[in-house]
Image 1 (cartoon, rainbow, N blue to C red):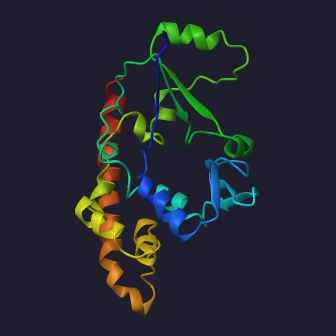
Image 2: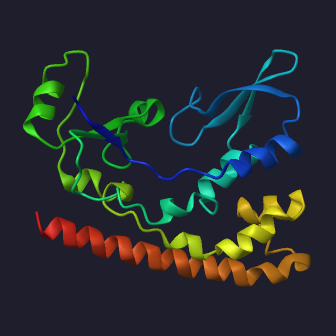
Image 3: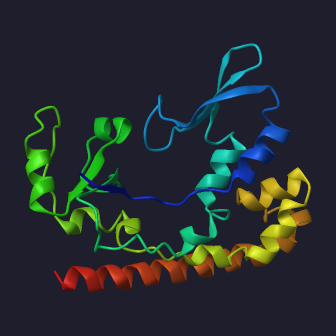
Length: 224
């Protein structure tokens, strides 16, 4: 038996998809891909579906409500904000996920590069004997800084919009849901000055999260 676990950012609430279908993609018949990477791996994601006329429709990331809300991370499952599986000590043979950061070529940035972590000799033997995989050995200093979900399962971002407030937002109209859940509040507009408080609060929370992750990363690297 070979065990493999994942580097996971978190699972978004299915309510995001329900909101999108109800307000934007009413002609949907079948979902093809939540994150279509045809145009590129890093920033050119698209929500792809088949409409009722059996045509394939691609909503780019900057247009799709679901993808915009997914990127902001306000509406993940509760357990994803304090995931006990995001740690260096793992029970699996392999850990796999997207490789972010590092010295990548433009082609690699477009096509994507995977990260494979071998936790024992058995995993190393399996990987090194697969001739169809092109791989490059890297150290922890290259893969950990831009992949915090390898070692840190705690997210402070959940406090930007607490659960009780989120329950109220689920009941609001689409305009409010879109502005808040996709973080597209226009604080520059005179009519929306009241959102400035939330924007400042977001900056503070993300800074705290960044400091916490950095401290945890330094502690891990020093212990190696």
